[in-house]
Length: 597
Image (cartoon, rainbow, N blue to C red):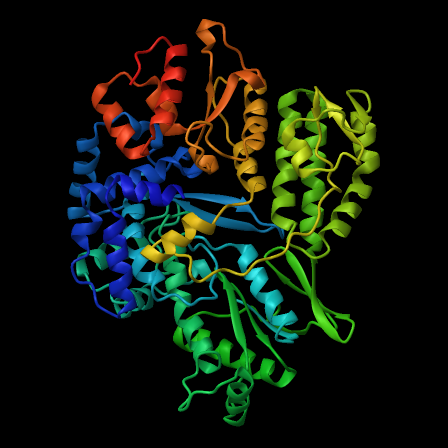
């Protein structure tokens, strides 16, 4: 993963591992400020921030990451260290974004330097918090995703026969976090460096442009906000788990059946929490347990966390009779033979939004039938397929969507494209989509068929995986290979200024054909590591054709074009190249009339 590679570059891996291990042993941390403000941590924060899409969004000072890039390294480090000595965050810019339900979510966008500072704090606090977070909280945590949360829910329905759900909706969670309580929670977690806590308090109370200084809440849009919100709700996670799942028994039991029987005799409430950010469910076996959990959780949130729930949206659902909604999916426990299994689909308002977005893309193609608008439609289809293909009945949902859009699509595209079975489509198309579906060909680009998607099994999160332990990192390197579809989606949504549509399209095809591997080192490349290199340079007669492009790790490409001897040595050591790889690199350098290295 790119995060691990970045840690290695700046020598922070051991520091983060040490923080994680000490936190797991319940140690306290009273000297974190030096780590937060170290040169290596600041430069790592800058590098992480640079690859973030939000880095190009200006704050109230109008600056973006592009205004920071040209500064000398020592100047950036000194400025951040000096600002933190008497830290005063600049005003936060307010921006409203529309939610799926038509309402508006207020975002708070700090200035770019404040975002880098928040990233500095996040990097140091995250390993401490991760060591103490509950296993089945999945939102905004390293390596975890919505799909893991859905896999846990499906496991409890299918394997444990839990068919009652307590749905709790916290009223304006991010806007109502109690600042005093949050600082206490940080202290109780072992974060007891008063300088660090003072800086975080100032971030929480940063003035919002046009609204003033907030007395409560965590501004959505800040890099530290997601970590702080997980820390707030970590108390809830462990309280719920301690009521049943992790309740300490006086004697060990050989089987889970015996353990469960003992807990039932003790009048405990059987229930399992699954949480993604502020969206959570408690899965229960019967109505009585669900009712007890509902009232207990509402009371806990009010008394202990100073948070209210929405009575209209909070309810108990019997999954055998009604469906529940979670993370854009619908969930129901339907009969299959002698048992009940999870039947998951797509929420009605999500289906409506997908239909609306698809129509917008079709109208753009109609108005401008270019390879670029066709590629954007394909990127949209690949993205929604990648997200929803974990639903058990995704094929039915998308077949219906395609049917509803068929006439609209045909009438708008029949004059600008051909409707046919794909003949010799690019490798990306044939890797993910069946050639048995007819589709439109617009500007020589085959459109991905909306109906052609199959269910992909949801896999639960492997607790052995961790960025913060040596064993966990080894597991990542051995086992964690992302879905190629996901990385291709990231490539299709990225933009490279001044590159042709042909280059962008062939870049994706080449990455797909090479199974995401660097053509010199053979290492697997995440989208963020990919550089698509012209084998014969453009200024010497090269072009953007498929056969003139090579998929390389971006640092391998830097080594091919590098002339500075010191930088060449650094890159060679970092990449750990074999003699065969070096020979290949020198052949590439020869095409650019450069000396061998």
